[in-house]
Every structure is written in structure tokens, then in C-alpha cells.
Length: 116
Picture 1 (cartoon, rainbow, N blue to C red):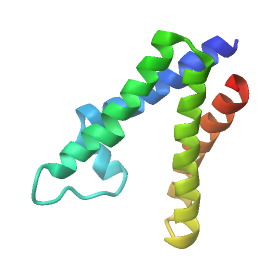
Picture 2 (cartoon, rainbow, N blue to C red):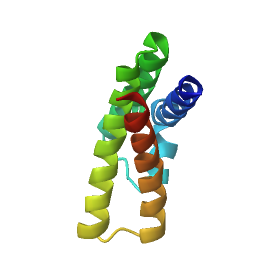
Picture 3 (cartoon, rainbow, N blue to C red):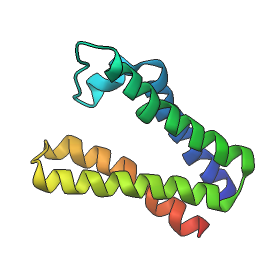
């Protein structure tokens, strides 16, 4: 069962990354980000919001190593921590921020507990 859930979370990670990689303008809009006057914003979306997540998801599935899935959990835990701090300090729209937080904290908790 753990193997199936690991793969499902990795596929979710790949899907999130695919949006950033293939549709950076849509992803930026969904995240309330604005692309500037140059294409560097698109490049950043493709790289850090896209390719990074596609790569870690594919690597975990390809290797099947519990530590690879745990590393995805570490990435999600870092994102969830940043989001939580931002909720408190930056006064984000609570409902939307908590949705994103749950999409980060949930996979982080599962992947770390199941694979370490």
C-alpha cells in the first residue's frame, strides 16, 4: 500500500510541476504572481515551480527508493514551513493560503512518516 501511495504522491508532484513547466503564465496567475517585463519570470516558473517538481517526482518513481520519496517529503515540508510563516507574517488570504498549505503539509507528513 505504501508503494502505491508513494507513486500517487509522486505523480501529483509531477502534475503540479507540469503546470509550472508547460503553462507558466497559468501557474503564475493561480499563485497570484505577475510575470514582469522580461521573460525571466517565465523561466523561473518553468525551472523552480515546474522542472524541479517534475524531476524529483520522476526520480522517486524511477528509483523506487524510500529515501527518494522522503526527499520529496522534505521539499514539501520546506514549502509548508515557508507558507505557514508567510501566513503569519505576510497576512495572506487565509482560505487560499491554507489550501496551499494543506497541499504541502499533507504530502510532507505522509512521505516523511512512511519512508523514514
